[in-house]
Amino acid sequence: MMENPEQARLVLTKLKETGLSLALDDFGTGYSSLGYLTQFPFDTIKLDKALVRDATDKRAILLRSVIAMARALDMVVVAEGIETDEDAAELAKMGCHYGQSYLFGPPVAPDAVLRLLKERFPLTKRA
Image (tube, rainbow, N blue to C red; front, side):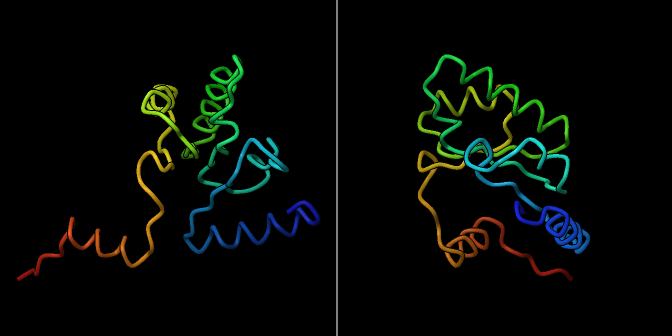
C-alpha cells in the first residue's frame, strides 16, 4: 500500500465490489495512517494491542477519539489484546464493537470453529 497507494486502492475497491469485507489491522502502530481511513474502502478497523494497552494517562482520550472517528465513518471497531474485564467494559462503553484477546479464549483452528457453529446453530431440515 505504501509503495503504490493508487494501485492498492484499486485492488481493494475491486475486492470490496465482490462482496468481501476489508479490515485495517494493527491500527495505531507502525505504518498505519489516518489517511488510510479515507483513501481505502475498509469496513473494519482493528486497534493494535499497543494502543489498547497503552499505560499513559492519555490512553482513554486517544481510544475514545479513534473509536468515535471510526464509528462516524461507519466502520466496525475491534480492539486487540484486551487484558482485563475492566478494559473490555471500558472499551465497550467507548463504543468498541468487538474484542480480540486471550481474555476471551485462545485462537481456534477453522475446523474447530465450524464444529462449534454446527453445535450451537444446527441446521434444521425444512419440509
